[in-house]
Image 1 (cartoon, rainbow, N blue to C red):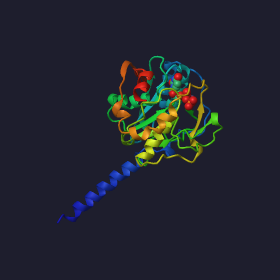
Image 2: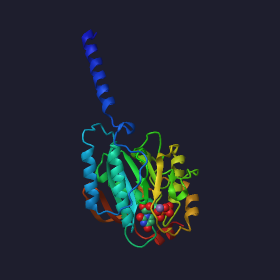
Image 3: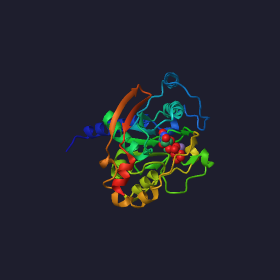
Image 4: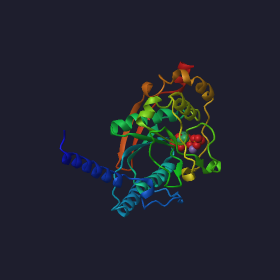
Length: 300
Ligand code: UDP
Ligand code: MN
């Protein structure tokens, strides 16, 4: 039998560890730097000026010290929206620094060439390449470049309870809450959740379909899409032309179920054209996805 004083010592150590942990885990509601709803900045700054903003903000955070539990990769699909990108970077870094919740890095995945845009493929590439960049990412936020969060109480983390649709209220739609089953715009997945659904479909070229397909995958694999009921999830959508809808999108969506297990992360093909680390601001990876017509003719 263990002598009693050893037991006491063990309990005391456990209590001490618990105390340290509970005291220092970063939490959304305890940061004094949160401002709640704010006016987003639509200034188009250079990388250098964004960096200066970030450094200034970080200096003012000095003294707030806590344990960041999640390591988040923010994946942004991208082509030819340079003004949006600068506005996005400036706002998102400031929000994440004010939240002070996680370690994060931003990956901008740029589609090369003139084929229709393939958002799903770019997201999948972002997931794979982020993990090559740093193996420890446990949370992935898939983020349109034109959606700018308006409230820093919007939780930029993942939930083990399920993938989360984060952009529930968008100014373009008069902040009408999403009622459909989509997960478009901004969403978060733990690494395991994204692996489980085999990522996005690779088959959607042009506007539409891939987000509904992802939502179907989530339900097919027995998970719920989480949505916050509160209005912390308000976003401004920066102005852009409507991209050409993919005429095949409904057909591909219908046929989706049979192909979840072989169309996604495990069937992804691409070529990296360029990999540019812009310091801590972001990493841009320019990729060649192959040709859309070829793919569609082959599969349908
Ligand atoms: N996107 C892009 N260039 C394009 C088309 C799309 O960078 O030519 C990216 C960008 O991140 C954008 C996202 O894909 O926010 C979704 O596309 P879009 O904004 O056209 O979709 P919508 O807002 O109409 O649903
Ligand atoms: Mn948009």
